[in-house]
Length: 405
Image (cartoon, one colour):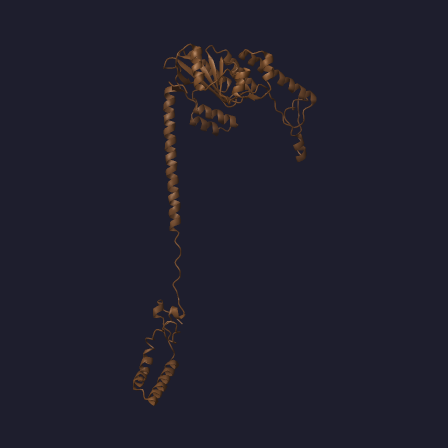
């Protein structure tokens, strides 16, 4: 059987025997009609052979619900064999279009972000051009604001001895800067760095007022204690007068893992702080004496800076912080107030009615290319503190405002 491409023209070609059977059936029908005397039926029967002959070229369509005669049309409704065209494949054009749209929006967003960053960077550089090289305040009486934030350490920022000393010297040499406000938000850090910074604040010739943010503790408070006046918020955590030395004993874990460290030392206690073995009683006693001595210098500085007795400070030196409310009551702070109150107090101590405020920050001596060169250097072991220091240097620049915050 060979079907045509159009099902409406499909036709079964009957063999010759079928034509003979149809002729015999027509003759039998004619004889039956003659016997019954039905002229109309006889006449119709008389045309049956002709119709049968025509069926070989154009077979009649079957009625709905009837099976097609052999050689007739095979209608789909009649259950005939149908050769349907293969189904069309689903188009994935919409998926491609969606991906293109998403990528287009991503590209637009990236371009907008890049342009925004470029404009911000350009404006920031323009600002630093007018202020970063500024060595003298240009608007008359000015209160310099120095930020002491994050960890107290040797990183070159104003939270380090070198960075703080640099800005204090700048304020010292600027006749228009009448006083300095330290904006402190730090939980402390290296005791030696805090000691040096406290000395720099103590020896500064102009009034120094501290404005405490959320945290002013440990080495940060040692620095603050040397100021002329300390402001706190009611919820500021301040104090934490104390010293800590941390040792880690990993010997039990190493034994569990089957790791053995063999140390070659010049003296028995050279590896005491490496954590590969427990401390001996003599070593623990030695380190405790160190902590006590360092802590005593802390207490002495606070007592001198706050005009308190050593005994009173020792009672407060429990290593814990106090709220701003308690600190005002126990003498560790002077007054509840914000940065604006601190600048007003600085004006009062400097004996001036009003002044502009000027943030004193290290000059951005490094730039993006310097940072990239630093990161590419194979000779440097970059630590998190190194990256923090570079980030602070990159964003550091001076700003001048005529309004108190």
